[in-house]
Length: 375
Image (tube, rainbow, N blue to C red; front, side, top):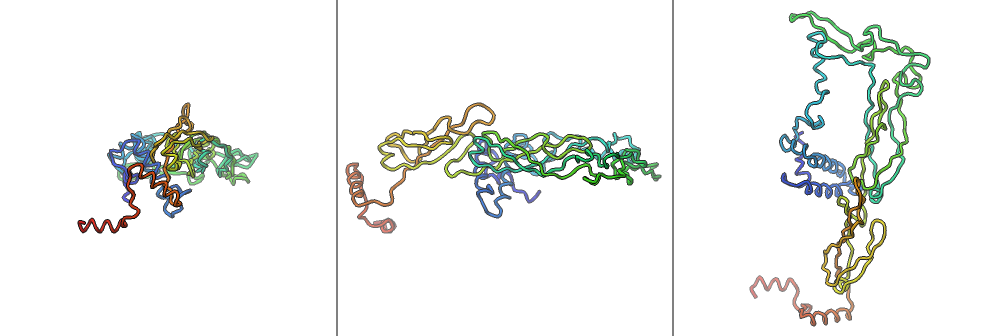
């Protein structure tokens, strides 16, 4: 873990950064390194690094542990709640070896087993994330064999209990040592630890009880999802073994950037240009929103960089009622090409305003030289 960068350094924030600072830093970097926007060779790796840092620092418990232990968090990978029962799985074998099985129950090799979870990355358009979208996606996954119904045996036959381990899936090897009699338990060599023998294998799955399939799934992406969101589809993961339940499918959302709109949470931001005349005298202009065009009144004397709020014109709230707002930033555009008549009018305006123009004075560099000389 020595090659991992500090998560605060990755996001470019200090250790005292607020949750809002961390969220803003993540959104900025996620847009910068998103593989759909940034085609650099290292963009995807940087995007993943930013996402990993945000996942830890945005969670108060994970952040507290990270501040204490750094990347050497002893609880990492244990769900954040300390030790789980699975962490002690190896102790049973140690007790079995020295005390003949007194240290815990044996696992039933024929017990139902839950299938693995799957992950699918879905890229959606900006407005699809805002308003929701439905798509059919194709997922490669293992499923229970339809021919043998997961038993692995040829139709009309069934697996037989192993005559060596009697269905336990394990063999006991007794050894006499200077410390006494020791019993070592290991997977049965006859059945491979399965507890059963399939003499006539299913021709479809070759005795595995599972087959690989391409499964089409209809996914509904709710309105208001943001980049990096995860949606869980229960039971759409890999099929379970021996009648066990299927795993889940997690859909990770990647949202494309928009040419005009930017998103911060449930709010939308955009920039619109104003002419000098519009800013000085005021005007009423049309503003595109996510659904329509609306009128926006520009007061006389509006300065460049001023923000106006369009209430309720943002993103629908993912968990709740209502929508965010749209924030419009106006930028006054200075004309770069003027006719002589326009220049004369501006000179007259400057004269009436008491302003002094410097068209006929020496250049900026000449004036700077004079300043250095002390003239």
